[in-house]
Length: 226
Length: 264
Ligand SMILES: Nc1ncnc2c1ncn2[C@@H]1O[C@H](COP(=O)(O)OP(=O)(O)OP(=O)(O)O)[C@@H](O)[C@H]1O
Ligand SMILES: [Mg+2]
Image 1 (cartoon, chains in turn green, red):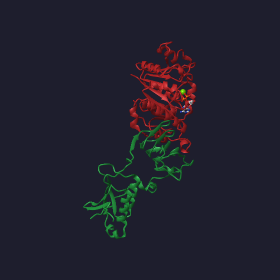
Image 2 (cartoon, each protein chain N blue to C red):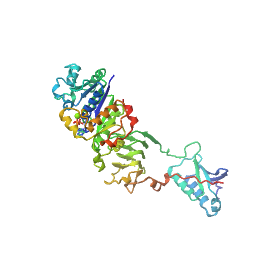
Image 3 (cartoon, chains in turn blue, brown):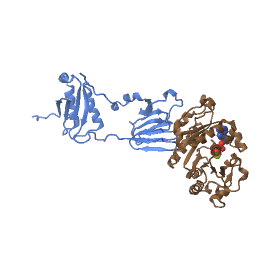
Image 4 (cartoon, each protein chain N blue to C red):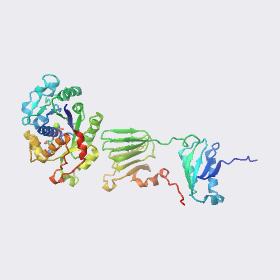
């Protein structure tokens, strides 16, 4: 005799859109499966293929990891008309690993100087030849990078190094070292970023970052007018 | 109360002594009372550039060791009433003085002079540390080459750490022709890397070499572009607004004019 199982996903309609209550007493994978079932089931298509709708997700007392959040978003991405607007746990941050904190610093890092940092760094200023910025997280430079930048210095390979004027003498991400080709064309003298791909450092134009780090891309919430 | 300005560069041979001698002479010509101090102990040069070598009796180490009074060691310039030189010792080395001794010496000279210009030795070791100890302000000299700019950048970083008011830049030995074919850096490039205010651009000029050998600073030579550029630098130090002259006369241009005012 099967017990009467209360649904692990509860959906409510409000004037603002849809509220999804995800049960916090069951393993997240089970909740996710039920959600998938509800959203993807053929019989359900006719309900979901309506107009654009805002979705608010309530996690109860549960906190999730970044990868669980990604899985969750992926399930929702199957329904193009559903746009996740908020994601929250009761009275606590919904993310287990606290979100990356970015620190903003100003000033020039001159020859012989080393700027060492923990976490993500936004530097408003130049890094001159012979100068060095080092960070355990991402490095973003609103200025000219002409010296050395070392991101992910304690082992994070997913970080990037970006600069408005990208002329580094050397780049390091985690333990991978690279230097620019001997010939830099002047036309390459604009906003770029570096990242690791196949154990090598690659450099690309800023507008390609969203292809490489889709999880970081912002998404416009669809609106219907009239 | 006079103001002390150290002339420094990091890299050797870029024109610190030439710049000290010429800014000092130009300020004296405007009517300021100026003292030049040569802190390049063991490698003294400034006396030669000023043509005063044969008048040296006492030097800076004698003053610090109290072998003589400071006024006994000061040498009055032969052409300018209000210009004096405190020469370096030639037979000692950099360890003959300390930062504190120099700081005290400069404090004594402040009452008597409007400007005290300190000619700094090359490098960033003890000689440099001593020279900047008593300075209120700094003039950093560089040539438009990567190595010199790199060293100037290092020195600016060290000056900022010592809380010496934002250094000002003199670009020396500039050659427009060489910029055109990419042989050297352009003024804008140097200023953008170092991100400090520009005090002047001195053209590469053979008059400078001749006048150095003759012991008469090039500012005395009215035909020399370098002499004119140094006179302009002196006026900017006094807070005047003077358009920037880059080599050819028709290339007068205004760069960061209002910033220059901040120097005086
Ligand atoms: N504008 C110029 N045009 C041509 N020659 C110059 C110019 N400025 C300096 N020089 C020459 O460069 C040489 C070095 O100049 P100077 O002695 O002033 O440099 P410095 O920085 O004091 O050197 P050091 O580091 O040895 O003290 C000298 O021979 C000088 O004549
Ligand atoms: Mg010298």
